[in-house]
Image (cartoon, rainbow, N blue to C red; front, side):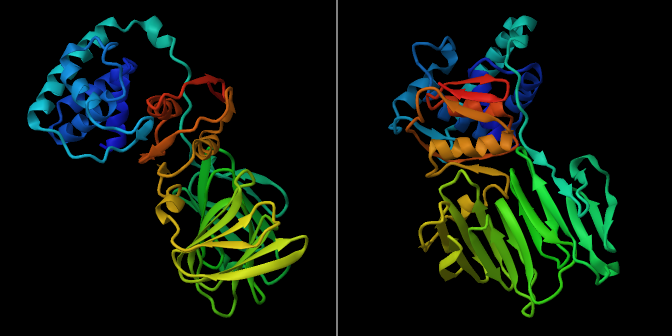
Length: 392
């Protein structure tokens, strides 16, 4: 079991918010020797953010006392604990307390109380909309594996959540284009006709020909995408980004983040080399060749030159592709923008954007309520109205 799931269940237990299914899962967790160190670490982490005077769980008081006596930075949130494991005697205490209070919670939880819980929102998943050359649209997450269409002889093959183009029977006639779009709450992977692999983050798109010909391979993207470009020295690969920047490669791995509501268009190189050029008022103010580990930033207003970050945080850049929310050094507003895209929600601030520091990571397969439980431990209060999340 992932540490994030253990952390979530421990938090739900302390909040007395376990569902019937979660109660069963939590009871199994208490009886699993392999997870006791992680469970203890989760209780130790969470207990430090509770009110000693408010708790009625006397068996947990030693844990709370130890946590409150530790020197934790105020209003700093740990999503994946990174501290050393606790002693076995404390683990046994948590096991005994957990079993007792699970039974008490089970007894006192009424159907009416369970029904009063707000509707949860599931995390994002694999899925995309494919727009064919004739303008018809295909929802890829509703189809079975196999050939789903043909474009000028090129077969479009869907297999296990990935779309691939087989150009073996393609004609050399008119070049036609397809567009892959991911709505909010979706991400998808496509293999282009030349073998280049592209991962699309939520609320993103890529437009490309169904057969590459001529002297270059050119695609256009919006939002965020990660590329593993097939090498072809005779046919450079070019990416047009929001009509504000262009990336030229021969064969490489890189990520481009070009959401309109972010301050910059950021191109981060993982392997190989790329040339990044920015555009302003139809002119090219400059270009730069990146080395692995560097990031080029171009202002979304397209009024400035290119800024190069020498040692980019590639863990942060690649977190979305690896199924992770990355919180180290990330502002609260940026986290909320990620949540808007992944959970397909709107975030509204009643009293301005909180000034709070986070650290750690969290898997993206948790529901919205599960993530809000974690954020709530930093003292942030939310109200969910339909798909509108109100930060109070």
